[in-house]
Length: 374
Image 1 (cartoon, rainbow, N blue to C red):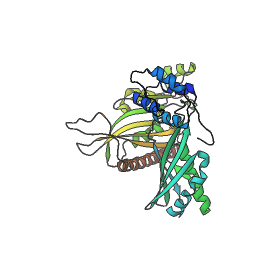
Image 2 (image 1 turned 90 degrees about the horizontal axis):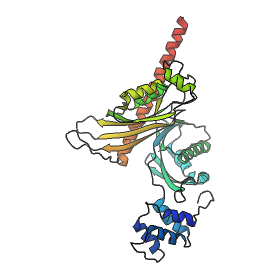
Image 3 (image 1 turned 120 degrees about the vertical axis):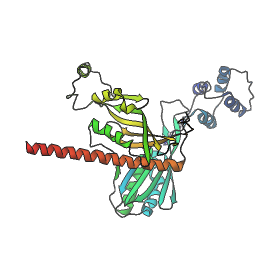
Image 4 (image 1 turned 90 degrees about the vertical axis):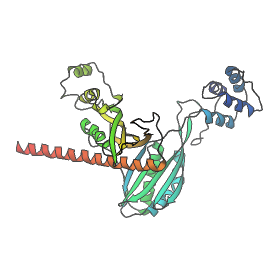
């Protein structure tokens, strides 16, 4: 169900579903056994699919197949927002949070509120639909946790960066404002006002070196972007190849590089010269000890052109064995460790934005001085 709509399946969809490899022989036996039918291990999948698809089916058949064939859950990247509370307390935030379930019905979502000391936790359950997927993957149940706390007079909002959770977050802040007859606005980590490709890349170069208590180890994945509607159109470039590409109407918008020491490669330097800048990065860091595990992180701006929607993910760690060797498989962090590392990324991102803002202002000041002297 979604906003009054009912999703149904036909015999062709069930026939196709029973041919999928995700549905094991054991799953097929359970489906038939629920109908009181025992099948042979030698029965072909084609015969079983043809027979089962001809039967009458109900909602529970759909649920049984969707559970096995539906989209697998994935970890959403996190983001942080700030609201200047102007003297309001976490109690006013909690009061508004308790009203959420009635306010977010249009998003097919519900909210459960928990108070943990000086913090408020809102568990949002919602559904998303994608009609481009098969019938058993079109509706996916999701949940996201919004963590709320007040620090230095500002409400810190940590949450997954998904469309529904973002909408719920805006409804919550608006509810707090209405209940207390004040004006509140949500701020976030972004560089929307800085369009320089060099400055945008510099943000990530600064970010990966600023994790408190951790030393930079390597950058393994870099995703770069080159907006088509740039105003400079390579005016300062000396490359004849680039001019020829423009004449042919060819434009590469996105590219990615994977490997070791990616930021030091000649390939990425060449792409910088063509106007590309980093919008997403995967990097590794270690603690200041010889036997440290390797921690892996990811950060990006959701809108690569506007440089808004900053989000991050503490991916996991490669456990140190001995003799400088590490496990090849990555382990996940505990919830406590993931939160601790997430705070480090948030603070590093704030420092990176401040660094870019300061250098941008200094450059502007230098330009003004030059203009006066001339």
